[in-house]
Length: 298
Image (cartoon, rainbow, N blue to C red; front, side, top):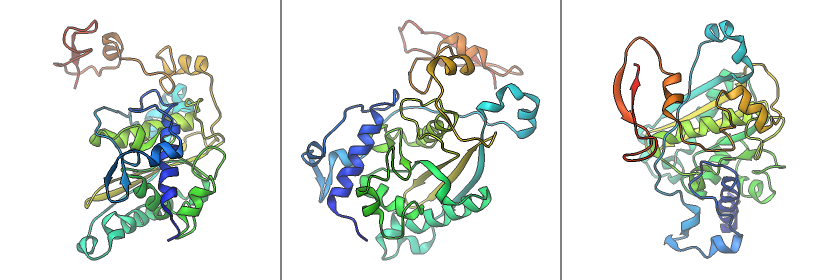
């Protein structure tokens, strides 16, 4: 493979650059290449700013059927289709002599191939991607495994400016695990939320414009690789929406892709289902202005 150490530094730099425009990111500091190189060494060639942090967080997605969407055409412009999805689990040879197999290179290749076939979409149409960059090296490997670059040419792909705005594909516009954060169970849905905002055009301060297809990659070491392909339900390419436009269609009164606000009790109650209820959660923290027990209907 053609990678050099500076490629990993560049990957880290871009992720930190992207996260500065994500209001939910754990880190929002922009670093130079030299600042990243000078960050503390952790193990061997691995340095601190090339690694994801310990994180806490939550994310959610609302899934609806096509039949439901047909009955609610007012939501059609916001709907994002899961056009393809595949999960590949490990096999005994995963833990053999190949370090590339151990970091799920082959599992990712099989998963993306199956997901793209289901979506009837070539990888060349992917304009934005959220991938599992627990370390900068893992992003480099995954760029290759997903087929975003020519085989074995991920290093050159990065050096040529192909993983940010103006390049071949915007990789991790959220800042990725490295800078947005890695709250484990919530990581996959955080990736999903970012890609939905991208395809809707809501992420207007970091948008991969004129994109029709988004790709998501997530994994668990020695367990599973999952790849999802997203498209707009209306088949159109994305275009930036203003914050005022989003505030109207979101129903929140603001743009959640560019501004992070704490949910209010009233907002939570407004989206609860009706058949049953149970008091189960506290909003705003003990003693906070929003301290309240609300009814969760399950």
